[in-house]
Length: 126
Length: 126
DNA sequence: TTGATAGTTGAACATATATTCAACTGTATG
DNA sequence: CATACAGTTGAATATATGTTCAACTATCAA
Image (cartoon, rainbow over the protein chains, first blue to last red):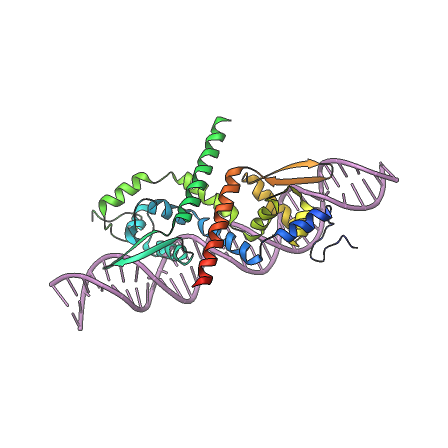
């Protein structure tokens, strides 16, 4: 059947649109990078860390105290955030200070927060 | 010890900053909503679906064919996206057509994509 | 009504991942 | 040097989640 795709269990309904969309799809690697970026932000502990860091740099112990969690779990999550270029750090004596890495991150973070807050306000009205 | 937090295994190093940051933290529920929003975008299948829908609405079979996946898995993921108000759908005859839900989503999505692409270009230069 | 196709859904399985725990490194101080 | 504290890290465990499979509903056409 010409309309069957080897890797798919159903027909192509709009052949041209499918072909066109296929041609415009980004590389798999790009999709993986984008989804990975969101995945890193998709954890409430990490989001709380970002809120805490939104206005000031903080050391691991202070973050742990703000969130009421162990320094180990915070350190693990900071490591994830750092490896994904979402926070950066500097050591000063015994402490390591973390802060948001760049403005793209702040922008995405703030747009998303606004989106979620506005949506929840909409839902209250209904 | 006055400097120990009941739920944390380490000292408060900067007492004032910790207190101030604690006071400025959003509600747990808000953090959960924000992280959940990102979590939904944090999967490569769902990101591919959003890329496919970025310029035109599509039915389930066509999306499945573009991604080379079963209609069942696509339908499961569309359901996740729909429940989180990221896509919307309309039925027309036997087909159900999906499209991006609102402009906030498009904005976050596009800023993040730009961010990831620019970052990967930076890395190529180095 | 019957058959065909589009799409949905719940359960099961396999994989991914957040936290805990314990051991470790790095730095300052006595 | 030894001690104390800040922070990191790897392994283990418990939980979350994406895909598959099979059964289901919805719509159209004969």
